[in-house]
Length: 169
Ligand code: ADP
Image (cartoon, rainbow, N blue to C red; front, side, top):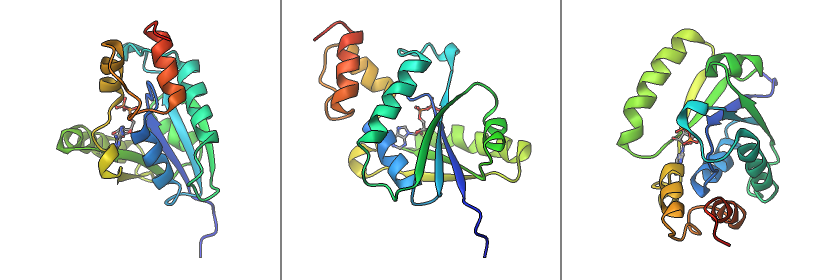
């Protein structure tokens, strides 16, 4: 039997982290022994929160995440290729969340390309619980910006960061 701990990378922009992401994180810890949350810098996506803010929010959320198997979870920013990042941290698994068919096309292409760049790294898709499947950071930001209540989609801490960003207390 192979006793080497299995390391996984869950990459994303996490702008900001949602309850959908947290559900995937909990599920991922059942698949790998160590999970690295790779925060993509993604400046060209024009993130609402800076890299440091996104990392800090994720770290804060991890403190309250209790339904994981005691697996170590770490947050690391990256701005190189995902396959290079995964290899550099010794990961053999990349975790992605799948929402609807709309995610499929893009993910399909990405797995195809990544498996050529790093054939030793396997991509594993997980689905969030029904009630979280429709959540996306993009819509959370839009709802927040227009003054809607995002409390169902993000934690109270993230909600208050959004309120501050959109200048509501
Ligand atoms: P990206 O910028 O790559 O879309 P995100 O931060 O939006 O990164 O998401 C990171 C990962 O989490 C992606 O695999 C995305 O599909 C997944 N994800 C985001 N929200 C959900 C959700 N509600 N349910 C399942 N997976 C999700």
